[in-house]
Length: 111
Length: 94
Figure 1 (cartoon, rainbow over the protein chains, first blue to last red):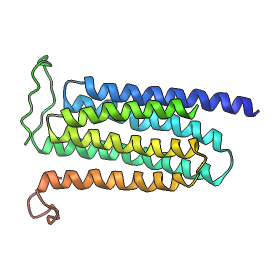
Figure 2 (cartoon, one colour):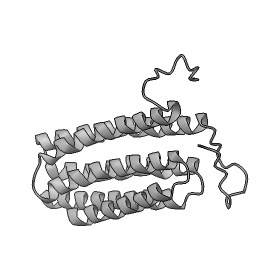
Figure 3 (tube, each protein chain N blue to C red):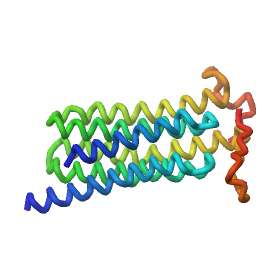
Figure 4 (spheres, rainbow over the protein chains, first blue to last red):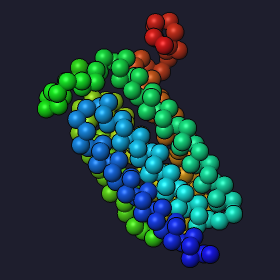
């Protein structure tokens, strides 16, 4: 039984780590602010979720598992909220998404 | 097992910091710092497990709370220039 738990948590941790790195690379390679919102959200939900789930399996039925669940639920609520707040603030400041094909030159009129 | 996940999170932290430095607009920086904050929460949780110290998770919870508040505070500061505004009288659009 514990072997299955170890294998599952090992897999989850690796997948979570991979998603965190994919999100970070996405943060670099995306051409425009609004496209970068997606990988940032990806790391927060998928990467963090899988890593915390992997740790949860290792923690078993203890208070540590409750704390991990609290962190996971809290991240699940606040990460979309903060991404939404950042996007609204950017729009209010006049930053417009990159719509047509001018990916080369980033039109940033924000302060 | 934890070491590899910790290494992955550390590499991602570095990459997100690069975006924080490069970011042309202030909102890219806010996004990158928010991402760095979430990764730090994961790092603290992983280190807690790596070093067998379960009380690290309390630090991770506190850090997640403060990270969110910090992002919202920075956004308000960017929008209104100071913290004194409540947002209504300046015609802050909803």
